[in-house]
Each structure stands twice: as structure tokens, then as C-alpha cells.
Figure 1 (cartoon, helix red, strand yellow):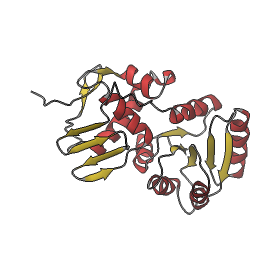
Figure 2: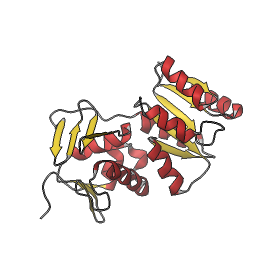
Figure 3: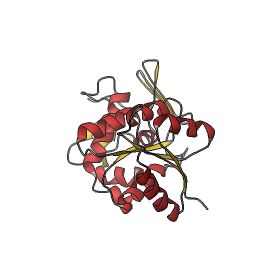
Figure 4: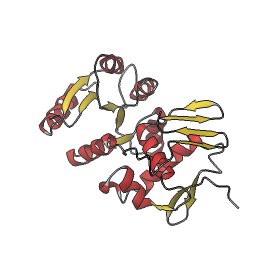
Length: 232
């Protein structure tokens, strides 16, 4: 049984061949595309689970392709980039990616990132309210919709998982380690800076003023807390 249907998008045929060989051997069903336009057409024609998307492609860039995919799909997207700068990683997340991997990367790291991106938190009606109104913010987990000031905000699947877990534990400080393990898995327990980047992205999307968060609050030296009550 396939572990998932993966689309590799890269203009370099050698990289596509290497990744296809690696992923096929690990039990994934693999498709590939040479350009952003080809990738978008592939997604229209078949059901896929994850996209490995190179940032630096001629013509339609990886970031443009990611934005285009994200307008109509919640598929998991991992960006492949040669830059390790936080600015470029944030740009990938801003475009709608769930994760990023810096080239050159090892097979274990890529496979771990893929497992984390494909991992989804189960909906649990007894642990989290499916619908929540907080001032101008309306969160509807059942329909995967977030509305801020009357306008729909698109979250990536991993951002939605993070928000769901925070909502399941309202007004309770949750440690960095617990959040990372719950949302991404055990291999991410030490990735505190990684979590900060995702929290900042989520704040940009759901907070009326991201510089002064009202919902996702920082608990110094501990982690984060999702506030559903007014602060004193």
C-alpha cells in the first residue's frame, strides 16, 4: 500500500530522478513535473497528497506556484530551497508552504519532513469546539474556515493543525516540546525556533494586531497559550 501520492516539481531532471528513486523505494507513489505550470495541471488531473516544490525555477517560480496551488488546494507543500536564511523560509510559509527543506539535504531529514507534513491531527469533538467566536475572529474547524473581520483567512494545513491543538487546550500554557510533538511529531521536539516561525505566521493571519497578540499568547520560557478570555 502506498504511503502517499507525491508530486516532485523541479526543473532539474537529475534531482527528479534521485527523488523518484528514493521515494519509490520507501513506498510512495511518485509523479513529477518540470515547471510550475506543469505542476498545476497535474494537480487538476489527479488526486495527490504532497508536493515537493523547488523554489528556484525558471519562468513561474516555486513561490508563485505555491501561491497558485494554495488558492484552491489544501494539499501539503514542502518547499526545497538552497537558502537557509529565515527571510527565505518565512517567504515560503507566506506563500502557503507547510514546511521547507534546505538543499543539500539527507534522505532521513526529507522523509521525516514528509511524514510530518502528511501527519494530520484527528478531529475530536469532546476535546475541541468545532466553532468559536472571539470578537472579530470566527474559527470553524469543521469546515476548515477562519474569518477575521468578515474576511476569510486561508491557513495551511499545518497552521490549522497548530490552531486546532491550541484551541483544544484553551487558557492553558502548553510547552514548546508538547506543541512540537503533538503537531509535527517526536522528531521535532527540539525545533523551538521552527515553532516560533509558525506561530508568527499564524499570528499574522488571525490576530487583529500581530505585534500585540490577543489570542496566541507567549508564556515566557514555557511555550504558548490560546486565550479565550480577556486578559486582566
